[in-house]
Image (tube, helix red, strand yellow):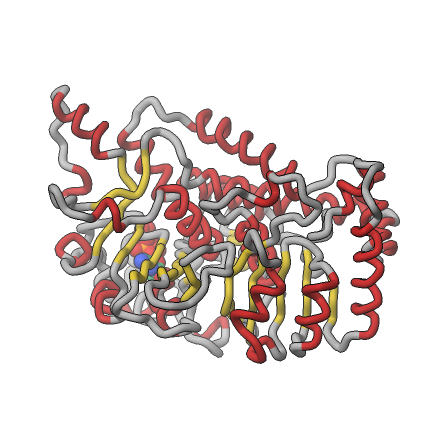
Length: 471
Ligand SMILES: Nc1ccn([C@H]2C[C@H](O)[C@@H](COP(=O)(O)OP(=O)(O)OP(=O)(O)O)O2)c(=O)n1
């Protein structure tokens, strides 16, 4: 069986990640992963006033640039520039043959340039486009610019070599349920549950409900009629007929639900955040760390990547960002942060599904366990990075699980200066994989998911003297 690039997404498994899955472990297709990443990039935190909040017809847009099915750019529009313009500035002629995933259909200004650059495919989320048509329908005072732009986009599309299309794919069976169950069981929620006995599943669902509402308002169009009007203006009249329209809306709703669930798995609440594992008194550490909002955003990217992991039992995702120090203009909506690479755990590139064992250490025979063959999320992120790691700049890796003993020296040796990670397995020595080195790692700042040090201090003063993580 050929390892898929986005087709077969359900595997039978010996170990189960969830009880109700009955051995079926669904994965996100690459196309859906790129689409979700583009939606999430639209929500990249910005220090500047969010354009979406301002009264403007141009909506903030997220973009994922993909070359040979690998992500080489994560961007979002800024105050002055659209996502497509940023792609041209950042990648130039390297855009040739790339696939671009937009969270909104790009406007004609962007489209003419990216088509001209020779991109292979432009996929967009079929909701309100970058030049908002929803506002055009709602505000009768508008000057019709968005409708004119939609027409220009259609003309560019029909004359271009690039395929401009909607690439959503139906989700694998049980995917929504799987994401819900694994989000509840993930390291971040587990840690809150362990430390805060008052945290309950109910709280997770409440938090998720808020996220669902927020994301639905941003990414869906509540009125079916308005949605159809917009699709028609975008040249998608075929999708306005049933059963296609109903299934399109259902598919979009499920993807938004997945995004909201994953975002809720690292909640910005309960006094938890990414704090230094071993804080140095009076050091400048606090000035050098990212804002909690930014750290959460990046770890959620890694959580999304984890749903593409090839290990039946444990999906892991990693993403590397760096902060530009010298020169360069911050034209991207990501400010001084720029994307370096990302990955998830998988068997070596080009291997066939049956080439390697998939068993874990609970099975007896060591020879037929997965551990010697699987490439870890961090290893893939470092190997397939699209920019060099500059030791003078702050480079950060965000990984959903504690880096293991294979990866710790790799991360340090690569010159990565900060690790943001889950650390639930820290100090564990399993049969074929160990997490012993992370605790002793020096020279790299380790930010782990824990209770705010101040509230921990108060708890300790009140008599609870347990040391966080044993780090
Ligand atoms: N920082 C890390 C840690 C692990 N992995 C990957 C490598 C393996 O595919 C899987 C191993 O995960 P576990 O250590 O959780 O081992 P099991 O999957 O056997 O689960 P269990 O915790 O039940 O032993 O995760 C990774 O990519 N990056």
